[in-house]
Length: 215
Image 1: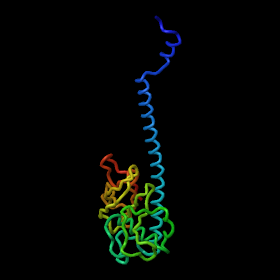
Image 2 (image 1 turned 90 degrees about the horizontal axis):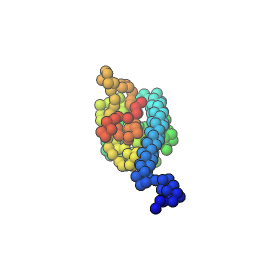
Image 3 (image 1 turned 180 degrees about the vertical axis):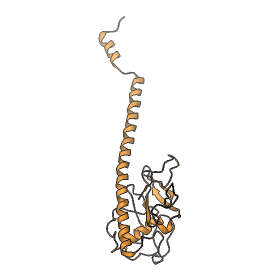
Image 4 (image 1 turned 120 degrees about the horizontal axis):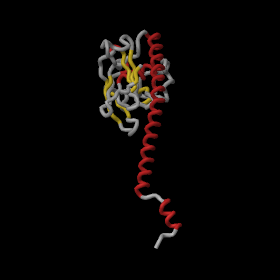
């Protein structure tokens, strides 16, 4: 007995399970590509903004030098007491120097502060309302590392937050040398470093890349 014309047309116009799975797979791949591209575009914007913030910080440190005759320290001055640890040290010193009441950065960085290692001084320093040791952060809300030229050669440990997972992690950063001459970059001034999109200072062992952003 031959199938009716109506039933034959319906069967030919439907999708098999394999075809449906193939469509779902293709859509999944396209969505993944779209998300990755959007994430890359967002990181590009944040990288551009962070470069601008490094230039802004550089101007503030230079203004400080014009007034005081020296760059902001990256080792905690004795007047602030003993540092609770050596983590995020340069960034914390930069915060203490620029953000005290009456300093060149007073009130400027209020919405750009983090404290990824959650530490504090034993007592509230002059010019501040709290004892917490904050850091000025980049667009991924990770500390911007800072080195006075006197501390070039020191390797600092920083606590950063993974932009994807929100997990804390540690990585080391140091001042940069010219790869050809092996002389320090900015040899008589200072260096500023953002960990970049991956939130890791230096080489990322998983990707084999270094996306740090420097002044």
